[in-house]
Length: 364
Image 1 (spheres, one colour):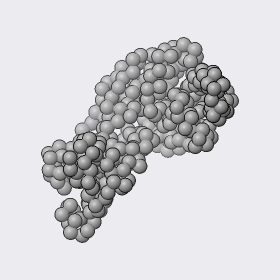
Image 2: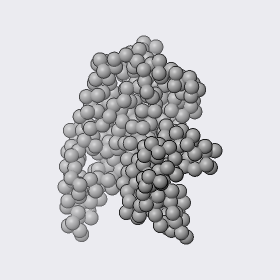
Image 3: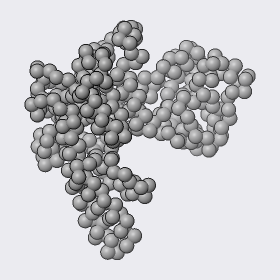
Image 4: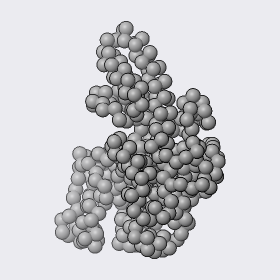
């Protein structure tokens, strides 16, 4: 699963990526300092693993991970080849979710590609380029469907859906805001549309406004309004501050966040929201050798969840011994949980829940 960090030049994308991955992506005060996308594997913060590590005295802790891609800044006209043009768009095409970084701060020392800061205009600029690219794809798909329709009249519904979607996009609206029926969604899912990808808006503000009442920030309000209309979240963040926090030790980080009045860093919230937006959850395994979080898609049944560990576990699945993390912690140990009858034996139809602690029984 990949998340693409997207935005205009000089909005803080690479600074945010640096903080997420500590890989030190190039960042500078001029457009296109990021050309080839930087890729980083990011661990998903999960305090449950620390608790289980102490409970089992485990030798190793293995968290879940997701992949972030820092994509070059886009400019108006990208769909027609301006700036990095199609190269930028092709990089977005490879990700599952867009993290759209929007500049919500004034700084005379950091140039804005359009000469002034306007979050609503910036979002519109990027959305428009994605929409224009999608219209080209839809026109090609329409031509292909019309030709095939001559020999297969069942394709009429597909053609009608494409025409509806084209009209929607021509009104300057993203594909993700198109109110599709389940049947239409099945068709749209087969078309690789950029403006159909889920989005998480990251409102990048300066340190003072981020630490204060950011809801009073008119720029943040503008982003929040757009996100609400699309049915997605907006996350307030200070990329520069997050970069500094990412270089602290665990103890320093906890102390700093406590003094700031935050339970977790903006980055941790960004990662959690991104993980959730991808439709992912974690189940946990624990023992003396290791404690580990395993990533699965919400709705995964027990045999397929077991297959994440090894294909033999899925092929020879017998049952899963499961207890909810909170119940296990209340008991203090798996032995006590079993004595109290809280460990359940689940079969092939069991749908895993986030935080399930599990031991698989299998036979190959």
